[in-house]
Image (cartoon, rainbow, N blue to C red):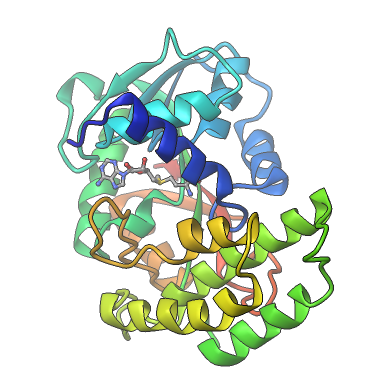
Length: 293
Ligand SMILES: C[S@@+](CC[C@H](N)C(=O)[O-])C[C@H]1O[C@@H](n2cnc3c(N)ncnc32)[C@H](O)[C@@H]1O
């Protein structure tokens, strides 16, 4: 577990506020989750990680919320970014892989914004899905967003070029709010690109390759956007390298079909959402529902 003081918490909240879709859930993603939750009353839901949009979603429905997250600083930072009151949220500051027997059979729904990205495929995915199955009631559901290995491999340099082309239309002298949205979105796209072009055959992200991608993208972007407010986004969203203290290390992006087999093997029936259309990587980002059999 990692702790933080107020200054670290504020810095962390600032950093997370600079991340954009696809690293963060957007309105479409929240729309999918909301539709999959359905209209029936929900008593109790678990969230893996402390994504504020997900806490807000369950809080607004009057559902009792539990969060499991192993980083206290992130939890407190996410609470700052949330729009609802967390006074009643039960916070379990622990690894998802440490089974909490007190939570067996406790939840109708488990939500997560890309938690599986951060644990090793397939061994820890298998272990975690087994634990989550025990946390769910009969017919309980997991509803998640995830990143999956592109079926057609993506090359990083053209990927960055395409992003730079899209960025060429923004006004760097007097950027509008829309310009800043486009910029934040493109930097988050490039950040995802550093991982999805550093995958081995098994879907494990190679940290060294990813760091080389980060260096390459930074060298391209930094001279074009040297000043505020752009430089802060590049520094905070794109630059953190794999292995740097405090960085949330992305580990796994298996192919969707393989991941789907693993869910079935553990005992979930999958209802996949359609892959989302994104610039340069159409089949990577997916929301999906897995119902306990
Ligand atoms: C689930 S993801 C959420 C990121 C997401 N894309 C978002 O925008 O909210 C990140 C969170 O998971 C937590 N986390 C990562 N690995 C974890 C693990 N093995 N056990 C518990 N929490 C973990 C991190 O501390 C972080 O707060």
